[in-house]
Image 1 (tube, rainbow, N blue to C red):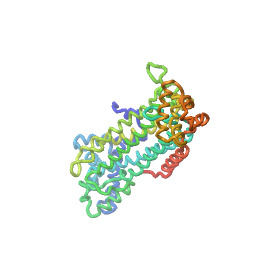
Image 2: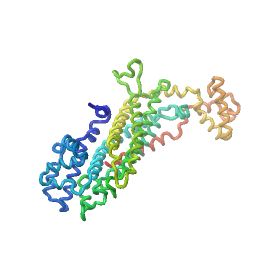
Image 3: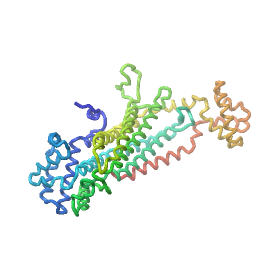
Image 4: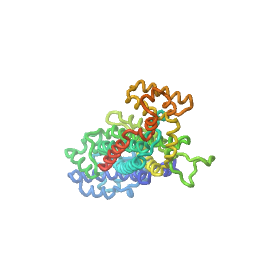
Length: 454
């Protein structure tokens, strides 16, 4: 009976979940055993017939998950169990199975093969999401809205500007993935403590030929296990990407507040927001992204603690990695799918943006007036103090900032009413937003257009 929500199909795509299913993990380990046997035969270490036999039997439909598990009850060692079952299937050539290898030559390299498949899916989803954000940056480039700091109105911004910021951030995460893939997607054939002693004089050639068959580069050096800083970097990157997705989700959740309602998740005709409140339309997908991001960040600690193993290895990393690494990839997959869906179905309310710009009755344009006065000769410090006092006066007297400004002789000495109206138009105080959006979109698109498959 399923316990984990992933097992029920709630999270992660079918293709991502298949990568980390028991049968695929077993097949990857069998692939490593077969590639090693072929490399050994090619350099004359074992008979060619043995390599052919091992390759023919190294399939999960023969060496099945159930058979290996049954044998593991006796061996109390999953890799030894697999090796025994495969050896028995190979008959007289079974003695050449696992020749010179140690368990983590097989398990670590198989894990990397799984991650290579997972990276391809994650990379494609991330590319699509970046393209969507770039498109939305263009579409909503001129949709003026309140910029907010500390949860309060700051100065105007545009919705397209926000999306351009997110596109650039996710592009940086894509670059990081390409960089870390060169360190993470490496296999190991080094034997008991990594010195390759059991493989003899041709050890380096055996390693080269094994990795070539698997489409991997070898690690530069390792002990019995691939050094866990590589997988810790993977988990840190996953948490980083997850946090970037969380950032977008949090913004959408805030913009969907009843009091703001400048953007909102799509909501299906038959969808329910509450079991008791018929009016509710909740940002449940964005909240899911935020919730899963918390889980990803929580997985970073065990990944870091896996780095300092005893001497050339111990087993304290193995049990938690069986959870964290597959979960990390499956959850990222789910988050990317969900965020893409949220953005493509986003409801945008420009009329509420304009209405909210007027909430402070012009005070959102205080900086614009201050800088105009400073440039006209008042000086920045005096202009700041003047506008700060007049803003407080506008609140106290329940007036618009424009009303207070146009009746103040210190202000009108430098700016007349017509200029004040022009200065306080939010559309006139957006700086170089067009150029900055173009720059961010150009960068993001260049990153994904220059991509290479991990």
